[in-house]
Each structure stands twice: as structure tokens, then as C-alpha cells.
Image (cartoon, rainbow, N blue to C red):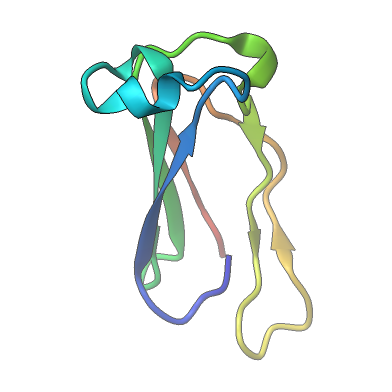
Length: 93
């Protein structure tokens, strides 16, 4: 991520095989969404996972947060974090 302003986006995952994604409007069983939020003032990345989609071979299971901040000597890395159903957060120095 790039620092400088608050931001958020939603990542949608589907099985990558069927056309069940179109049915996601009626049922979350075909997809999983992860809402990512960056809070620039606290330098915190947080995420919340929604949906009961369960195709483990096709789901992201972890994230390795990296911050590219203006004026920094290089990127700041926080190591791998789980993308389990509880969500999570990480704060950069």
C-alpha cells in the first residue's frame, strides 16, 4: 500500500471455475469478500472478511503488508498475516 491518505477497497474471490459469481447477489455462498481499510493517521491497515465461501484451494489465506511511504528510505514490511474469518489489522511505525 501507499501512504498519504485514507483509503479502502473490497476484494471479491470466487471459485474461478463456475459462473456462480453471478448468483452472489442472492447468496454469499459463491464468494468471499475482504474489505481493506487504510487509516493514514495511525498507519493502520485493517481487513474484515465476509461470506461463507469455502473452496480452500482457491482462497487467499494470508497477506504480507508492505507500506511505501513518501520520504521513507525503503518499504516497511510486517510479515505474513492470516486472512481468516476474524479479519485483522497491522500498524506500521
